[in-house]
Image 1 (cartoon, rainbow, N blue to C red):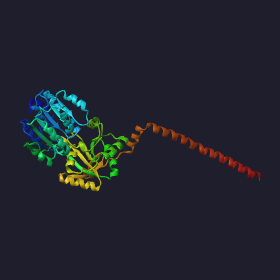
Image 2: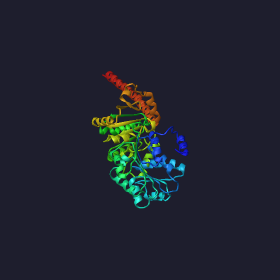
Image 3: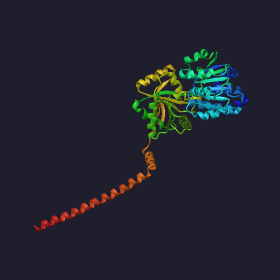
Image 4: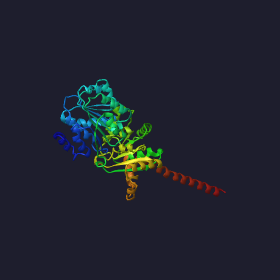
Length: 433
């Protein structure tokens, strides 16, 4: 690592490079093509950013192209590159689907050296001649196991066909897939595989568990969790329709929640993610689109409102919490059938799973709850709370009570007077007879 990067690295408080950063640095710096596999939250972006930035020559056109699976991850990667590229006077531009195309074209005229984008938008700009490829010497495919399938694989291969013949490649992911074994055939290269998943221990203590609930009661449980102190969670759904219904209900009930879904415009998605990162939102409702690569510092929890269908999806979802040594919770909602599926996924991933409960304004395992004394709120505290929050209502009640007491005092006096008259008349009648 050069002196400028090393100084900034230390200023940011990083104590040491992670395994994936150490083991891929020299390979990438020397021009070797690499397949890098490491757990979620282990610093993969810096693993390819730092060595590749050192090779770039300012003012020599676009030399590095990075492809990401989603708008959010592309923007996040762009931010990381900009931070470090600025130290070397290099420019970075982002080109993603869903964003304003004309603005992206205008930014390309400023001649950036690094482009980060989504495959579809990059291919469009390349085909239109807006994105010049003649000087590109390195192609990085982030979250490669997801991108090297289906339509996006086709887009990437079309992009690669229009790049110079001598290319360096980087393929990075937290999970392996059959597609990674086809890289040599598809791209005609012999990459070095660096797999540190078994040896990397950057992830903090994450407790995985479940809360049994019917489909009808999931929303009530989610709302209850959102009211816990210092609680914040990324909430995953399998279907956009369910996400939209829950989002609408939470908004109506005043819960601070946002959403990220594929059909939203990029500005709305970016705003929701920014507000969530700043702590303005307690819940961020997402589909699988947000399961890849998003870095949300010190995220307390991930909630699977719907249990994922595959273990690989579970791995990427839960990787949003417990990043870089932080602790976290993964809470799975579901009925008995869903929980059986969760336990099966847990066994396949060698994860310890437990029943989870809410006690004393915290989430904890059922075993932990056995040793915890429930905190009871005193009546005095509740009365004070009500008095402070509803002073006008209490004053009105007091006034009404005084009026009723007055009525009660007047009524028996009238009855007593009436009783005396009756007795007098009775005596007179008797005397007369």
